[in-house]
Image 1 (cartoon, rainbow, N blue to C red):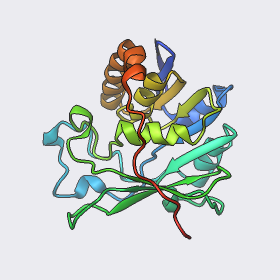
Image 2 (image 1 turned 30 degrees about the vertical axis):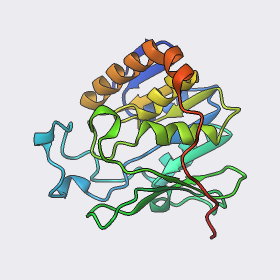
Image 3 (image 1 turned 90 degrees about the horizontal axis):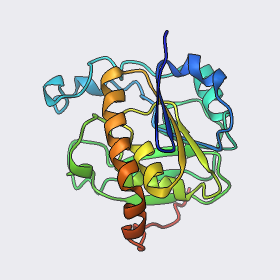
Image 4 (image 1 turned 180 degrees about the vertical axis):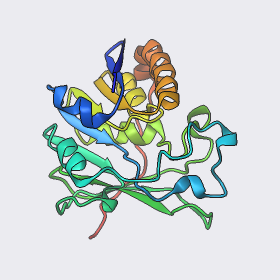
Length: 222
């Protein structure tokens, strides 16, 4: 499979299959990613291609165990959203996104597996009206991804091998981190290019005006 590469600011963005690209990469300090969980979300009555989402088969299967193992071994630190769907080692630092669901039909929370030596934490934020508009069925809020990056403060280069619409890359641009993103779907790749380019242009200004207060969080008793 041919690989397209674009450089935008401190971001290196690759269109291709991460299984082929990962062996060519070095110098990654942390993996922060949100792989497809294989839960068939595109079958949901709330999700349709008429909303502009790119493709109907992106979530039909999960990455295999070898791919997940390769991904988490790429860097000293790893945060994998939906980690509860994969065969990963035990961890004490689970990250939880509490969606403040209030009885709606989507899940109350999502969980991320990490290899970070820290206590479990909860981030609380509703997903509605996300970052100017939702362009991916399982798009993560940029604020959530900035929160994740706070958990790996020493990591200078962040990789997301399932880049999707680029929320991790946008958070990196806003916080002045280097980013390597891989996406196999051309539609989402183009969306990520646009979002990360916009964030890179505004990065210095955004870093100056980001709120100093952090989302409510507390330890999670496991």
